[in-house]
Length: 508
Image 1 (cartoon, rainbow, N blue to C red):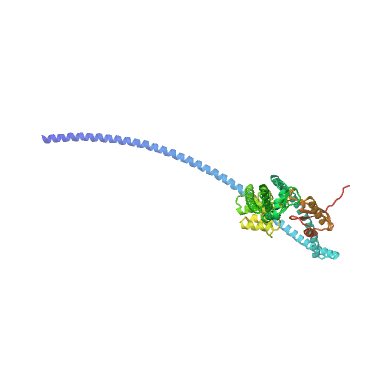
Image 2 (image 1 turned 90 degrees about the vertical axis):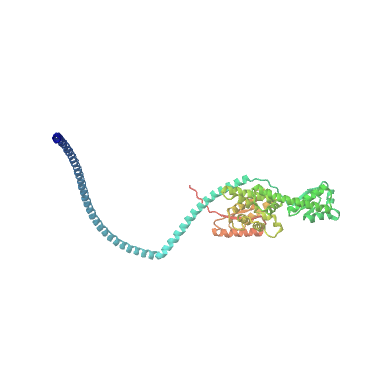
């Protein structure tokens, strides 16, 4: 039974399995059929897509080929055009080459003809030169020398005329500018001046005081004169005593001392000595203050103290009646103003102008000139080279090295030559000017002579037919030498010779 059951179970399971297998096979077949159908559908779709892609690519390829064919066609047209142009250019070049060959041949022929003509012209020229030399009596070189000499004279004359024209024009312009600068500088500098002489007068309360000043057996007057170095002149002038000395410092000391003795009333040698010593101390202080005031007035602050003190002594120095310190201050101001107008060193110009006459403070005590003494002082106190050169050159004895030196010389001449700056009697002044003109007109060939610039210049107009350009130099030297021999004068006198030729004609 068990075996039968097992067999039955086996057959039942086998039958069920076979059924399942059959069902699975049928399902599998269905799946295969569906798969084949799907694959066929996919295949068809792929084929369609491939065909479409092939069609698209074919269309693009055809379009590309068409575009390239068009480009190639265009390039072929361009190449054909260029070939045509090159062909035309080649033809033109061939024609030009042919023309050039013809021209070359023509030029060669003309060159030969010109060379032949040149040879012929040279032969004719030589014949003419020979004939001219025979007729004129000059060789070729001699004729050239004559022509060059004539041409040289004409060129020199024309160049001299041109140079003269520009010189005159430049001189007019420069003189106009210089006048404006000087006028402006003078306008800004107009200080007052005090003229001092070689004598001073002291007023007395009464004539009895004269006896007391003289003293017993003249002891008082001798004491005053010995202590001060001043001569006391007691004459018939009522109520006045005159002090005489070339040294204004000594004269000022004597004046102060005498006035104080008169006020005090005690006049005897011991008292005189005390008063004179006190007056000397006061004058020394006054000199120091005068130098400091001058430096302060001009804004110059680095001058050596001893140089300031020496400068202050100019307060009691005069030159032809002009106060030396005020003159130096005026020169400094004029130099500074002119330096400012032309762009030079204003401070250096003022410094040089202030110290240009510093030697006059001690020149009466030495045999050297005030220029030499001033230069020695400038070196001793280490003044700048511009100041030293201005001191040495302001009278023209040394060559100018700096622009400031020129300005100082001009300012010095302006300060000294202006009307009223220096005292001189009218008679001697007129006599000196007349003597100047008389000396100048005494020479042959002189037309006119004028003394100008307060006698600092003599202008001489010569007759051009009697005095040549070269003779003018000799004439100016002769006039200057005679002035030096026969006259006494301050400073320098410029001899200016003028020669002028005029041609006058009238149009009728």
